[in-house]
Amino acid sequence: MTLTSREGRCLRLAQVSASAGTRRKEDVSYTVGEVAAIAHVTVRTLHHYDEIGLLTPSARTDAGYRCYSSGDLERLQQILFYRELGFSLERIATAMTNDGDARTQLLQQRRLLGEEISRLQAMAAAVERALEATEMGISLTAEERFEVFGQFRPEDHEAEVRERWGNTEAFAESQRRTARYSKEDWRRLMSEAGEIYAALAAVMQAGTLATSVVAMDLAERHRQHLSKWFYECSHERHRVLGEMYVSDPRFAEVYERTATGLAAYLRDAIVANAHRG
Figure 1 (tube, rainbow, N blue to C red):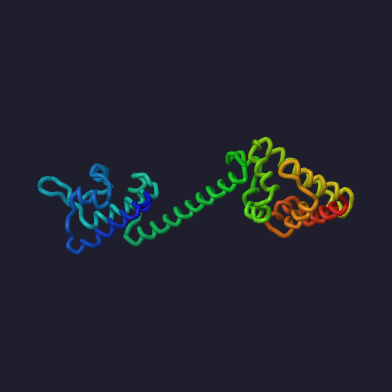
Figure 2: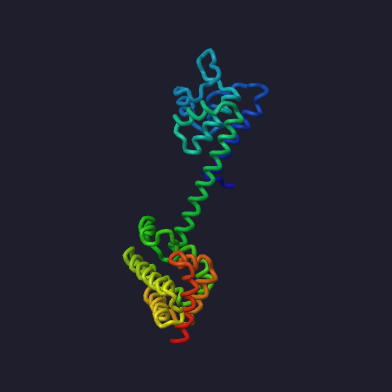
């Protein structure tokens, strides 16, 4: 079985701890070479730790050779753990000086591991979102994506879109078009959509019925917007989208951020416009 570099480092940490525990009763001394082999570090590294006072061996032979105790191996385990978390040697020295007894150190390690797990999970989620965005054809930098979309993330809706239309020509056409869009294209697209949403919200808040001509005209403008930027949107497909805007909270949120009730209002205007058309 082949271990990843991280798995290998974790195994070495465990080996250091196991070696210290197995031989503690005898309190057998370790040579610098033995410690280097157990921990998979270089002898030069151990010499450096000694020189800076981070890991000073408990004893030396008459000839001046370093002798490490089981307690020294436990301290080395702590050092390697902090190094795995990316701590500098100076920060490790401070942490180990302030940590106090073994229980306090273990609690500190547990907290740091929790933070590291959360950080890695966040990184994994970010990579996953980037992959989803790439599959959708959104080839923008992180800064450009924020400029264009703000808090809205198109990939949040990718699973629903694929489930409904993944095998359709409309979906394939949308993929082909958006793959070519630049940041400016996306900004124009989002600006046009925002203007439509704002106009719909204005007529809704003015008390205009969704079945009115002005509301139907805006629904038609919305349909034409989709046809222009994504795929040819028929009245029937537009009606299906309108139902989804209401039934799926992820889609509804896009419209509700502009005005409460806008998703349902747009759906009703789409239905009326489809009947008219």
